[in-house]
Amino acid sequence: MNVLSLFDGMSCGRIALDRANIKVDNYYSSEIKDYAIKVANNNYPEDQKNRLGDITTINGSDLPTIDLLIGGSPCQDFSGANKDRSGLDGIKSGLFYEWLRLKNEIKPKYFLLENVRMKKEHQNIISNELGCEPFIINSSFYAPQLRHRLYWTNIPLCHNNPRSKNLNSILENGFSDRKRARCLLESDSRPLSTPIKMFHRYYSTGFTTLIFKTERHYHNCVNHYNFHFKGMSAKDIDNHIHNSNIDLSVYEGVRYLTPQEREDCQTVPRGYTKGLTNNQVACILGDGWTIDVIAHIFQGLK
Image 1 (cartoon, rainbow, N blue to C red):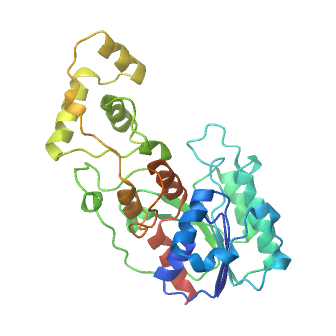
Image 2: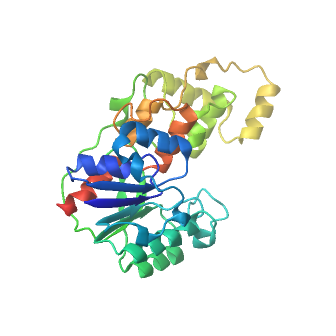
């Protein structure tokens, strides 16, 4: 099978094809982040000759017959975390049209496009262009994280009984009060200036994942926070701390996920991102695919 992966990242599609036991003859890919390409080359050196660079420079007529086209165009302009949400009119998410251009040029037998949940108007445009409606899969069925994604594909769908791990089962140490991790945010690779700020962001928004030393440590943090800071904004907390003498040592020891734990949350082989900084690991895993989800979809290729 000849595969073309656009917005390839660290070659999550390649990992998923291997996991689904799909034989790959040639894996062509387009990616521009140097450190993502470095990881892909470290793990799949045989594919290095088929790295095609910037998607806008690829001409479909220069490629051999492609059996499978895959990719997840940039989501920043679709994401609810972006206040602008310019969608397909955005500079990054508008690159979907480059993916579509190549799909029309190479006419693959199968295709798979992934992206975040978005405004219905943008979803409908993509569906009309691809001739199919997307389905939603939450990675929590396959991995210890909550991650809802849209998938457009003409690959025949298979049904199975996925098994997911509890978040606590993949921790190197410590305790989580949640069964699944939340968003794998790039910003969570850089601890905030104080543990209380980390806990406030975690407890008040839920839009991150924080690990505690023990279950008792978690409850101590909750009780302390509710007694001293409940209902306050981050700015109010700073002012309250500045004008009082509150002991904040209870929050010492809270941490974010390690690179290896992030790999487990995406069902990526442990050590796959070795050699990158914590920030780089957080970025490419956050942008990447949950491998077991994609491997499940690829079962329909058999």
